[in-house]
Image (cartoon, rainbow, N blue to C red; front, top):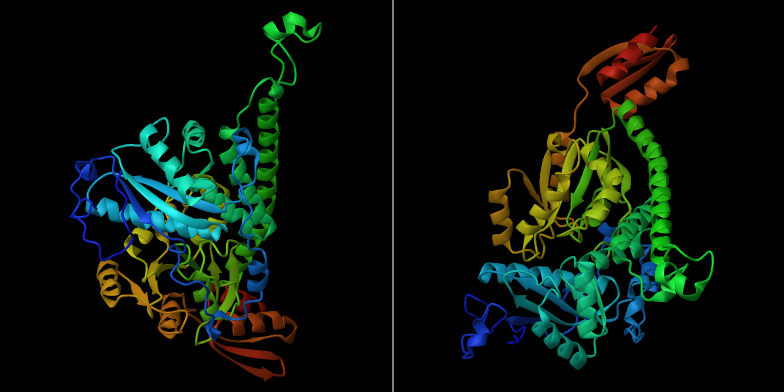
Length: 510
């Protein structure tokens, strides 16, 4: 097994192996690379520096007060209870697989560093990270028995109490790996679900996250020994359990599954009951012809910062993955006075659990109903093109998204490489370069949004009775260049409005 330092100046061959390595094992297909040799490699900044564009961060103190305390060991004394314990990560070692040359190794390392950021967001300390080059995962232990044993030695050496795999493990793989490393094993899906459970605040968001967690947990329940049986049966019942106990009975695992399915059914009904309220808000916007601009993108790309910069929303901004989950809708106006709404949606990530996509489908439908989509991209990320691809894969599952015009917003321009920005601009059809942190490019983005939004095109010049002041108010709110004059018989309205409002004005005119 070969271990690598994280020093970027170390020369590597095309297979990610040091040039001075002489051991033939170093270039074998099952090589294991150390890609994280120290803690704190997930995020480049320890704290977030806020500016006036971020608004009042009133929720930040509450979020910081809920940080997990170091030193609380979660080492498994009884591995049988792992599925029934709440995730409480502390000191972790990350592990991932890849197969291919230098490009595959770089992609795997970016993914593992993202996993480190997820682990830190969940409240753990990342001690080390391992990458194994392997053609396909081992069906038994994910890594193979030999490398699993090597992983157990590393876990013991660094004092870790949890292993996090950069994939979704099968229940059998998870159990077999736990038996070897002797600590809790968590996969990428469970980690993301844990972060969502921490950060969800609204009633709908909490219900969606709980539903996703139960869907993930259901096939991973397991029973242990006779203590899990609620009623003896078969040979056991015939050998002394007495009358009334013969038969299959119901094991505790079956009872747990039945209760989980019942809870999932209840959550689905609750989420469905919340949908009409969201639909009512959409219909109200449509009735008043208020266009909606949706903000979507990879997690930690700066969506909330951009919303704050454009609307002074004061939404929580933090240098962490999935810092905000609940969708936020804010009202804004173009420079010529036309109103529109900005909707900040949940962030995406590579290999986003399908349970979350299904649970948040009602929320993601806001994007399909939008007039314009602002696809926010972290231009300073090592792999921005990979982020764009991951986001579009999720958006493709949303009905109606193909008809929504998309603008790629390259955020964090103040710290991004100009060559990377230029490369994405040449690749994407419509882009805007901004920095929500400093305000650079925000004015240009507002101008682009104003140019994309529909303009009222029906010219009216009529008198509305004073009893219909609501129509005059709508003309001022939704029209373009509307002027009013007070006459004895009513209010004269002159300007451009949309067709629906024009019809209402004509019907009420005197």
